[in-house]
Image (cartoon, one colour):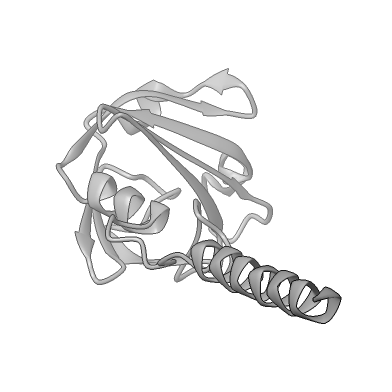
Length: 147
């Protein structure tokens, strides 16, 4: 009789362990978009217009009057009135392992933040003066605030 009780308990324990294992292995597939997909969708949702630009915390908005930024998909962007800080067009490639840091085709790293699809911030640093003329004014940490 003791042996039968032991076997019953052993079978019950195996059934419980199997049930817990199967319940714990739920479907890991997420049907919703990833955080990266949401960011790219918001980024490409419209043409972004300038609100404010700072370089090393100094307001330089007047240097970029009429600036617009459009992310056209396939990692491509277009700008107007980007001055020396932004090429008229180029690529923004999402950095591996990052949800919000891109690299431009000129190797400048750009941190991109979109807030509720209404506000876009592009923050980057130009560490070397690579242009002549206004070059001394180009170097610095930029924050472009767009809407």
